[in-house]
Image (cartoon, rainbow, N blue to C red; front, top):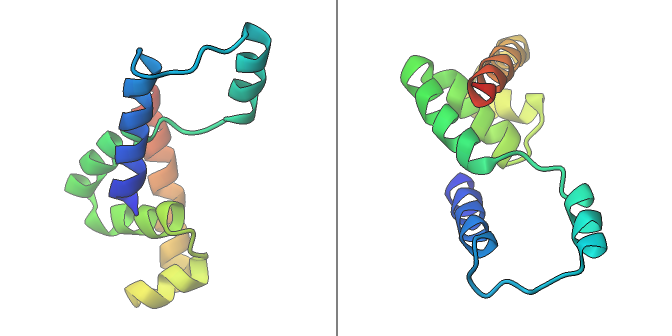
Length: 103
C-alpha cells in the first residue's frame, strides 16, 4: 500500500508540473487545494526509509497504522507486541517523522 500511495503522489507531482493537466480557474483551484490537506507522501516515504534504518519496528508500526489504517490493537496483534509498546512506538515515530519532514 505504501508503494502504491508514494507512486501515485510522484505521478501527481509530475502532472502538476505540466503533463496533461487541466486548466482551472484560480477560484476553483483554491477550493480543491483547501480540501486536499494531505501529507507530502514523497517526503514521508524518504523520512520513513531513514526511520527504518534507526528503528525497523517503529517504521513497521507507522506503515501498518498510517498506510494500512490499522488500529493500535490490530497493529499490536499483527506484530505480537503489547498495545502499550505499539502506542509508544507510534508516538515516538510520529514525532521523529514530523521533525524529519519539517527539516
